[in-house]
Image (tube, rainbow, N blue to C red; front, top):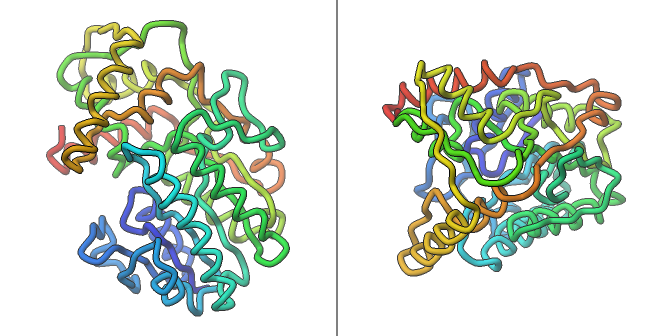
Length: 324
């Protein structure tokens, strides 16, 4: 099968391309002109340069691809409109391109997010209404609505992963660096439970959504059955690094103020900093958990990689890159 992966130069996109190749599929990767190829270099992947928010580029990319995995998006932005322009409008254009070119005839898999469903301590289920709590989640919820609204014309499936970790992860790097420097960040207030998934399991889950007929027209949480929290992630990193960090309590108002200041810097300079209001709102939510039982029961998909192994492999990758 020939598969297009948009956002293939990113963290999950790289792993998905490798998983597709390992199954014997042909992979076409849409990458930004002059943008990051990630670890695609050296792989037998057809590279197509283009902008995932331009219809003509998307039409050229999807042409002749029975599978389309739409991963291109933005996770950091200082203004709401940027999230909506890339994540929601970009999805609408990708769907339009597939309809115009007769592509995604076998499956269109959208990279959604737990953020679209909203925070939960008990575990969100797919049949609950979408209740995003911040701009990123709002944009992913709109992208999901657009995709599923076309389920009668395209075989659409939506993957909703929670926090993704594993080798190649940049999003959680600041927390690993804090631990490496001897600090374990704890936010004020009660524990905030997190669902998570290793990136290699997540890539397998995306393949299941493409391969299994039961996935068409549905959304699925792809998550490990093992939950944690922010401190748990850092403790796993400390164990992998052989570190003994000391706990540092951060009041919630201080995190919010620092995030607002970081977004101001981004608006003034265009530089995207590790901290932003989107991340602060996510960290301060009461919890981000989901129930992965639909993917298990309908698709036979279960995450295999333990938190300890995922974090250990992340630390090894960071060290190889010279980032820790």
